[in-house]
Length: 162
Image (cartoon, rainbow, N blue to C red; front, side):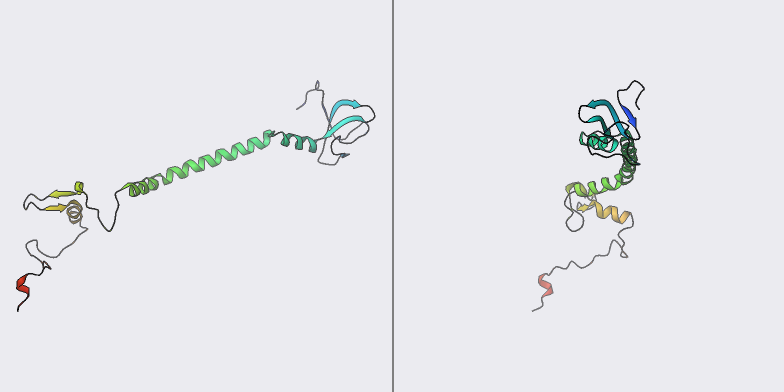
């Protein structure tokens, strides 16, 4: 606010001639006050600028009023808190998606990778680790005994009786 020693005075209505805003020519209304610069111009009179014109000048010079700045700052802090909460909430999903996208090409089913293979000690056969883990966890189920052999689905010369 203005001090008593200030060279500017804020008035509800202009008191000296011409009694109007130097910029827009308004003589006043309920929403405007007038700034008296304490200057007189010969052949014109007292120089007043209304608060509406002062606001326009301030905005043109990119001045931000304290109330507007405080309001924007409060809104920014609230949005930052909400953003941080959402980022924390969805971080596990983002990590899971990143892991899926960074994994080897999935193709159709399990990708056979040398690190997933192991050699069965009893038979010397290579087996896929995921198949062994799946059956150990109950994901893969069979009703047959391990000793029962199934069809090999391959033809040999005995299948063709001439």
